[in-house]
Image 1 (cartoon, rainbow, N blue to C red):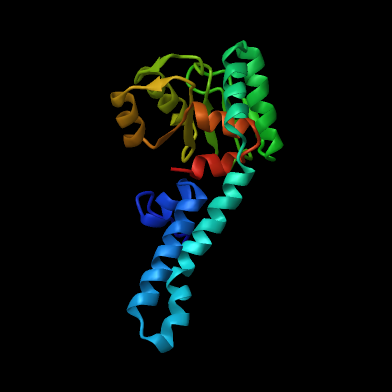
Image 2: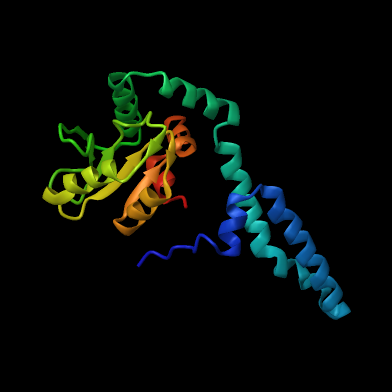
Amino acid sequence: MKLKMSPNSLFAILLRSPWWASAALAALVAALAGVVLPAEHRALSVFAALPFIVIALVAAVRQLRAPSASRVEETLRSVSAQSWAEFAATMEAALRRDGIEVRRLNTPGADFELGPAGAPTTLVSCRRWKAAATGIEPLRELLAARRDREGARLVYVVLGEVGDKARRHAAEHGIRIMQGQELAQFLCGRPWAKVLAAS
């Protein structure tokens, strides 16, 4: 069984925060432990701070590898100017870069099917990537596309806003929404699986 960190846990929040936040917390914990512990055990105060030091290192590595804000913005501008044929080719190339098997679909609700045939797959809907606002209807179409593919995961890709009702509908039916910043990070080289795993 794979353990998953709660998205609201302290460590998950620190992983999403700048690396120096964890480093500062590590220094604070070490200092407090140094004050509280007896003089002969003060050297052990670093062990109290160790989890925060590890989180700071992990966060720093992630942040160094992440695309810059200017590159993300440029990618968003670029894909918002593309035609559907261009955007579909961009998505397909990025998915194949990650070693994912990609099949284009000609169905109303889904544009790509990812994964080997016969195994549980992922259906991706991204034809409405330019929509300024997303309602429930395209999510219903994506759900309908899954009827013939038992166990398929669902991903809806969009640059614009997703309404509260649509977001609740997606959560109820297990639809993962990939919005602008996540999409740009994926297209800039962040692995698909890591984008989907992010909270």
